[in-house]
Length: 230
Image (cartoon, rainbow, N blue to C red; front, side, top):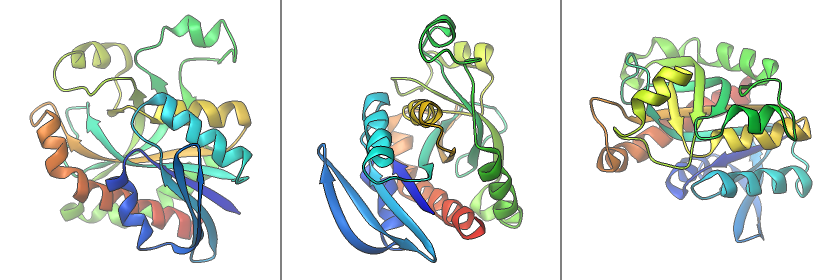
């Protein structure tokens, strides 16, 4: 089993590098792929850069060049649902784009059944088992399972209400949807683990910057727990 781990930024990847027994680093398309193991699992981890195109590019390389069997997107996100607090974590059950018209996805290639791309059931069930104990640790925030949405902008206040009314997601980010999209067309199991850096009450890029490192560590811990239970 070989698992690809994609983070958006270098700070989100950094906590993983201390836990990966690294064997080599391969550079391709201006990206660095860290190859190694976590326990008995072979992994290929990288940060792809911010945005949908960067994330899609990295995902396809993981599949074509490194032959990963599964893909996990780990990192940070903005909280949309009112019950989410900073340092909570969302595990994806399904993902959609909040900035792409439905017909573009359902009426044209690759003809999605709906705008929602579902997480792999086996990964999802494994994640539920992995976080059962962790969810009781309030100091680390709560772990929620639900919808994520992705778009090409950092959401602070503008656009928040429209996203809530149309999609009712738990969180929003700039990469998860495109990673799920690439995995869908390649028939590769996918799931995302994103910890919350900012919310409606505490919004803005400065809040994200303040909480990014700690949230990245939380997402890493939950992701590694998932790996251990596969």
